[in-house]
Image 1 (cartoon, helix red, strand yellow):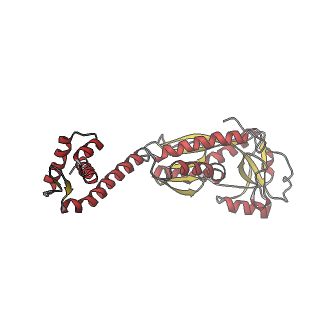
Image 2 (cartoon, helix red, strand yellow):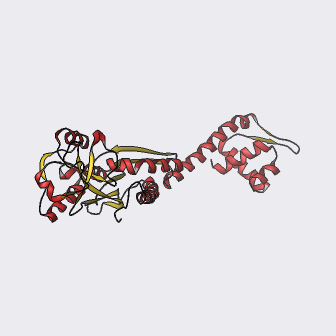
Image 3 (cartoon, rainbow, N blue to C red):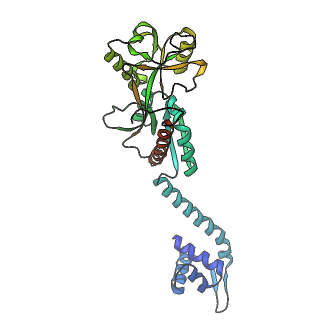
Length: 312
């Protein structure tokens, strides 16, 4: 049973006139009649009764008409669905993001994505950069928003969205809370809370590279991989933590403040990463929405709210 035969039957059923039905389908009457006959042979019943004056459906034709519309509708729906999936207009995508991407990138990008492609379903998971890379290589994530490049033997691609400064995270009562900047060398003389390298390799390396260039490394009092636990510890014990930022005026929980580190200034790239061999066509659609968000953010960063951005 071919869809064109069903379309021919439905046109006849609607028009009850072979000439009008043929014109509706841009066919000749003999071609229309032939398609109807093939459908009737396939079903083994007569669907249309035709005389010199009257065209009408047989009882079998009346019964078949509703099913024919449903069959044709399902075929068209299935066709549109597979085309949308192949073009990335429909489907599912698993997106990972770190805290800064969740604040700066995700809200606007997702709003744009869902506005243009409402049939795309997103599954979101917050996590630090190292675990995101692991999830990407395992196929648990389609896209990750994380710090730094990739080192997965070419299996993961990435590109920069923004460059972020790294500053000292201090509490309200810390002696550095009112400073405008802190030299990297000063970190050697005050207790710091640092994370293990595997949870955020690029940010860890940026801090350590800056320390190496300054000739002094941070005095690590405690390693802590949970960012919320780090904030609580910094607020309670007057330790120094590390945080990425664009503006010193960005709101922080518990009255915490980020003071720029300098001499040298450590920086880290906020990147989007995805698997080279990803079969998910929605990935490219999401990457396109990120490009628009990136342009918006770069324009915003140049304004009064954030001050001058780093080069990207």
